[in-house]
Image 1 (cartoon, rainbow, N blue to C red):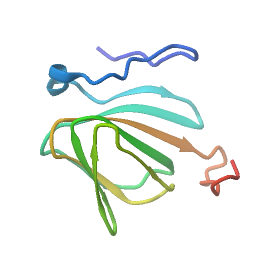
Image 2 (spheres, rainbow, N blue to C red):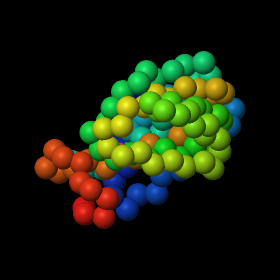
Image 3 (cartoon, one colour):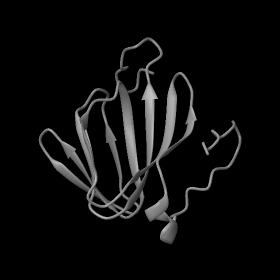
Image 4 (cartoon, rainbow, N blue to C red):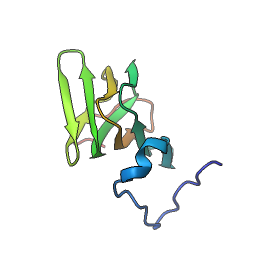
Length: 119
């Protein structure tokens, strides 16, 4: 069964899933033409291969442990950690333990990634 997207003004529960994490799946919370929010679930040992997103992204680790692979660094993300990436930056995500992260993507409405502070 597909999960419904959140409506404007609707509260979304992003608390840790705990024992339910191992059975959870990634799902979109909301998507508009300029913004997307996703609860990203990355099981231990699974890697989302290197890719690029045409927009700025943030990842906040809700629970577990994941590694964000960049072209020149690896960043460990544990509960409470947050990271920002510029648009079109190559990255991968690997579950070191079962992990749940809040992924946000800011899309440029003209197809270009705006400069910081110029949205």
